[in-house]
Length: 438
Image (cartoon, rainbow, N blue to C red; front, top):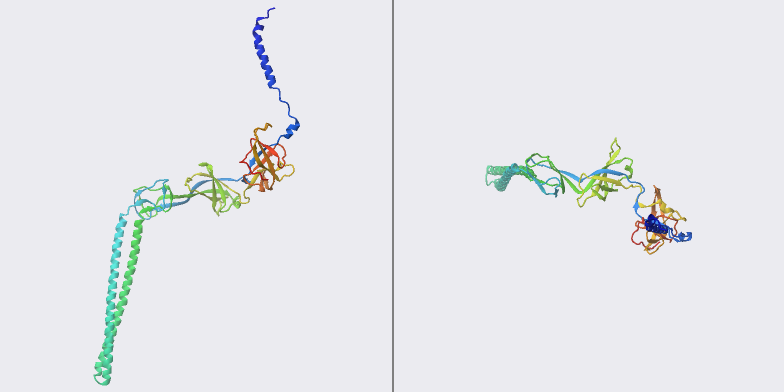
């Protein structure tokens, strides 16, 4: 009997399909189930974390704007036309650097005039001193004449008493002595008058010297020097402008440090104090976390919003932080210092105690072990008694017993015992091999 044509052509295809189906059934056959005893021998799977400090409270974030630690206006101190200005917005400046020049031709002419006046007054003082010297010489001459007249009067009076000369001659000598005394007194009075003239002339010299110093200072002020080191924040005039004393030329900022002003609720004021540290993040530098310090707390709150201005200062040694940047500030509460923070569930892994953590004791490669754990890492854990502080939001403070950087178990597939071997899950955080101490 001859088979139908369709059967002859389809036979190879049917054979192939049958073979594929047999292979599929073979591959889908489940492996022999593990016995309960084998599963009990497997180490528990755990997830670990690295201990770090923190706070239970969620810090409130305040926003502010950066500003230089100091802003100083460079102002004209003399009148004149601005000849040049050597800096522009953003340029760095050094303290004492000459930044501009005011026309000082009129001041220079005034300086010369005041110097000439001073020289004239000093000449008057010299002349007055010469007159005093002449008058003192006259006093000495009058004193000598007086001594001679007194000597003659004494001698003639003695002769008159002896009857050698007439009484009239003796009286004339006495009169001459009195006249010499009057001349001496007059000369001494002239000395005092001349000395007073010298004193007055010296005072005029002193006053003129002060006037000259003032004019010279005004002339020196024509050179505009930077009062601080920093950068130019604002340029308010241009060369050719006429300046008067007090006109602002430049505004300078000191960026050796920057400050951030934030508005804090009066409810938070009790937790803040001057000198307290703060964490500052700048949107301009998203990968940097800066440490600042409260340097000023305003004594006056906004009577409407009940907000208190707080000033935070940040070091800026490299000068990268400028002004006008958005800053986000968080304050660490003064009521609670930073402690080790762990998940509250990590305290409930042991059946015997809820005040113990399991710390990773050692870590070894176990990739050759075919026990079925996906991580390929085996470790041993040690029970660590700890002191628990406050708990909040499913977290707990560890006040003693655990140090930052140690690796501890935060969850386990089953309760743990001291010294037990465990398997680390792929979510575990570990450091380099910890010390094996308990």
